[in-house]
Length: 133
Image (cartoon, rainbow, N blue to C red):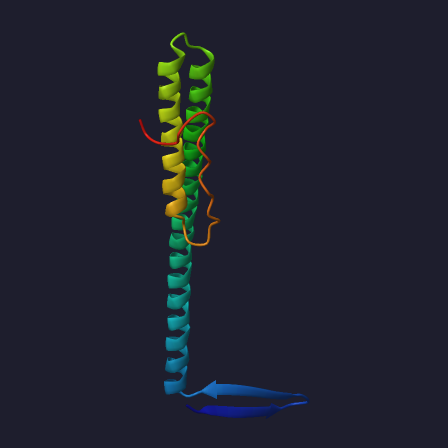
């Protein structure tokens, strides 16, 4: 790599750096490489953000489903207990639903996503054994 330095003097000094043909070609090649790397980085960044946004949406949806199913099971158990004529049979059904909810919570707690807080499953409901029927 070499440069030619031209100094002109006509009241002011002007310095001109003129690279030789090989240096100029190397600089153009480097410029092209940098432009290509920039394009790759931007492409990868876009793909990563798209994947991250999709994963975030999936996690949000899954958490919503889990919360909804737990609320449904808890509400269904309470509704059945409050509105029955064959209390013993419906209490057994409600206990079974409570057990399903506890099992789902235990399965989630046993398989946490790395870095998340582990939540202990709820205790069995009052009057229930916590054991499947």
